Image 1 (cartoon, helix red, strand yellow):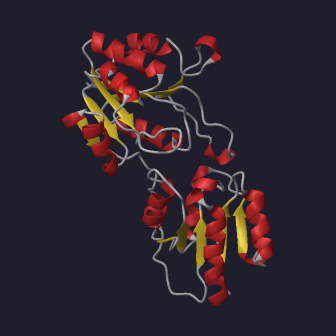
Image 2 (image 1 turned 45 degrees about the vertical axis):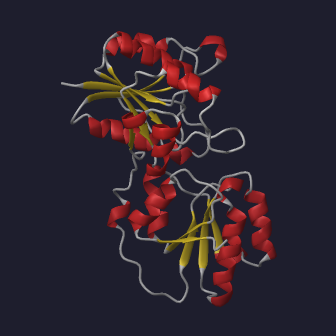
Length: 294
């Protein structure tokens, strides 16, 4: 039987997807997923039990969460055939990589596109020269989107080791939603966080254009994010108070898909998004996707 370990990074909104993937993989591999920390307290319904196959590191040096020798201890105990690392730049991941190479194990690094502090795509320079040197014997580099392949294959010179593979997605419930039908006014959804990168104020303006033509239109919005007050102010200015609802009352993750089920169209005016889960969820549900004309 082949055994595998994913040495991850900080858990995020994807933690439920990863936990369910780990459980599903048990049919094929003796798999464990290890994370450096749990998801921060954004919303209670995101919190998911780890189960028996997922663990969180607890022993860190200098109170820095990604500097720890605990992966080595766990790897010695588990002795997996395959070690998969969540990112190149995490010190604990590099220690796990060294352990794998020393013990003749296969290594995979899963990563997103590489950007600098200004948000620009990184080029071949000192940073990636060092990373490439450190990981020159990696067996596979798995990137989260197809359009990232050239960056790691050509720019960062990992060549044929680079493959594309998306994040796991928990969409089973969404696939059973009914077909949408013609209505006097559709229900629009903005499921992304109320933060600048997802552009929620533009989403409200987009909805307003529909509302003026079809007064029966209705908008439901994510309730969390630093722009909540700005969104509420714009809604009041446009006199949309009775036609917009914030999703403050979702109790569990299993209730989330029901909000897509009652929606017809997802509004997505994001300034940038790296393979957003909400798009996958909306498409699985059968929602139309509407992006900003600009």
